[in-house]
Length: 448
Image (cartoon, rainbow, N blue to C red; front, side):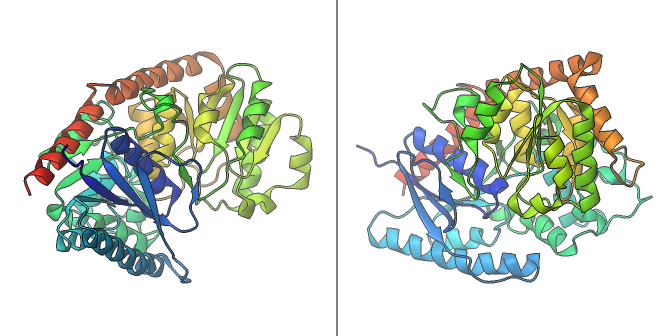
C-alpha cells in the first residue's frame, strides 16, 4: 500500500490566520493525507480531528512593536519547525510538504533546506494581495498620498480612490506595511501559492494573478457543515485563541424571530476608541433592533453602565462567540463587521447582508468590495465623515434590516452563498484545485 504524503502546516498566531489554515488542514486530512499542524502553545483545541497531529511552540517574549513581535515569532517558530522536521526525518518518515502562512516568508528556505516542497497560504483576498504585490514591486510609492493617481492598478481591481486602499499603505503603520508587502519576497521560490478565496468571487483578479504565478484558490475555507457538508459534524474550525460563549448565544437567539437580530463583531484585534464604542452602542439601542455584540474583556470597560442597563432586554453582550453558528441562525438578519477577510467570507458563505466598519489593514479594501462590487452591504460611516455617529449606526441598521434595500442586499448575498457552496462542492473550482494540489503532492512524493 502506497504511503500517503505527510504535510506540515504552520500559521501565524492570529485567529484570522489560524482558522482558514486549520480548515484547510482538516480538508487535507479528510482526503487521506497525514497532517501535522504547528500552533502557538496557548491555542485552545476545541475538538480533536482524526488524522491531525498538533505540535505547539511558545512565544513568551515581550514585544514593543509589530516588528519585534514578528521577529520573536520567527525565532521561536523556526526553531520548532527545524526540531519537528529533524525528528520526523530521524524516524525515517520525513515530511513531504510544508504549508506556511504567507506572512512567514522565511519558512520557504527553511522547508527547502530540509528537502520539503513548500506552499504559501494567503489569508487575504486576491485583490488585496495584488495591491501588496504591486507595492513590493515598487509600482507605487508607500505611503500612498491623497491625490495620487491609481493608474498602476490592473483593470481587474475597480478601486478609484486612495481611501479604499489597504490602510497600512497610507502610512498608518509603517512596520506593518513592510511586513505585508514582504509576503512576496520569497513567493517565486514557493512550489504552490494557495489563496483562501474562490474563483467566482474574484474571477478577474484571480486571472490577473494567474498570469504571474500558478495560483490555486482553495476557499472559502470554512467548516464543512456550513457549506458542502462533506465532513461529518464539522461545525467549528477546531482551534481558537478565545473561548466562545456558544450556549448563551444560541439559546438567546432561539427565542428571537427570524431575521430580527443584528450581529456585531469587530474581530480579535480591534481596539475601538471610547467615542466610537459610545456611538455604536447608542446607535444600536436607538435602532430598536435586537442585537448580539461581541466585546472582548479588554474592551468591556468602554461600555457605559447606563447602556448595559438599558440594552439588557434587547441586547446580548458576549466576550466571544461561535460566529458561524450565529451567522447561520435564522434569527440573524445582518452582520455589523470590521471586514476582516474571514468574517467577510463567512458572511458571504451564509448569505448574510453586512454593515461595514473597516478599521485597518485590508479591511478598507474588503469594505469597498462588499459595498460597491458585490453589493452585499452598506457603509456605516460615509467616506466624507471623520467620525461615526449614532445616527449613522441607526440608519445602517434600518437599511439592512428593513425595506427594499434589504431585499436587494439579501438577494445578492444569497447569490454569493450559492457560488461559495458550488466552489467547495465536489467538482467545484476550489475542490478541484485542492484535489490537484494533493495529486501533485502524491506524484512528487512517490517519485522520490
